[in-house]
Length: 353
Image (cartoon, rainbow, N blue to C red; front, side, top):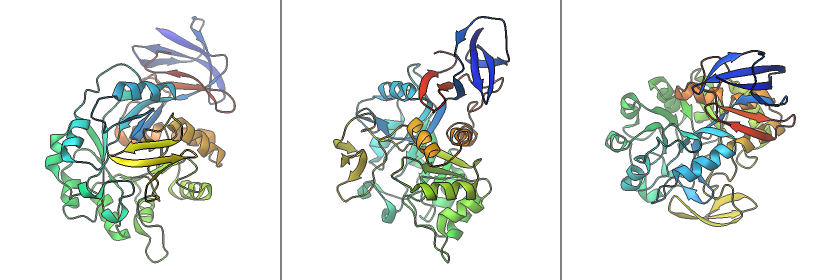
């Protein structure tokens, strides 16, 4: 048994006992341990949509998952889902068949397949030449895919949603309201990077954004980097959907943690200027910030700190069925320690500082 002493847990100074990577006690004790000196403690962050960082990409021919996971952990993300791009079948199979059982860095809980089952009209930074209809044979040829983004208006989508055991998220879509609602009723449970790569809300054509809001069991992903969505829209959608169904994501790419310059993302040239990643045609190509930075930016936009953290911990854990995201007895001992102005001070994974 080990103890985190003098943590600030939602305003109360207490101790947390940890054994075999799990929380076993919460409450003051006379036992010794690591003195956290009143730092605020929150669950470790969970990023369900992250393409890469520090010069590495999930789709690289060489396997750099360990290096990316180590960087993610240093930045407060204790669990993540490496996210693919719309590339060849062979590239996607290779990327999602890599070993994720290593102990270094953040836990890799599985992969997020973003494409190739998307609408070319809203391809964003995806390569249109590799887009095709939903196909269970590709999914079955891959390993450890836990979430799939698709456009529900494509032929074959309904059957794919019915048959696929992974979480289905609607995205890169031109679906109207009724089509999106039909997908949620069929079993889709999430909306990928809301407001990006989809129609905006129109009072006579509300589209997938309003469908997700009206679907009581649907979660919505928001990129709170200050570039993808205006702060007023972030505040509006959080109020409308409710903090229990919003998931903050980074959607970060290989330039995260590095300087401006030219990069390759999903096989395409990306230009990063003033920390904004753009394709040569001017489309946003993911973010260059970590999930912790997104949480901090959401707080600066007016989202309460506790709510912003919940959107990056408890909510993604519930969507993905993880025993994480809460500081309660029995949950995994993944934590971040922050100061009073939400600067990251320490990261703890499965009880290890």
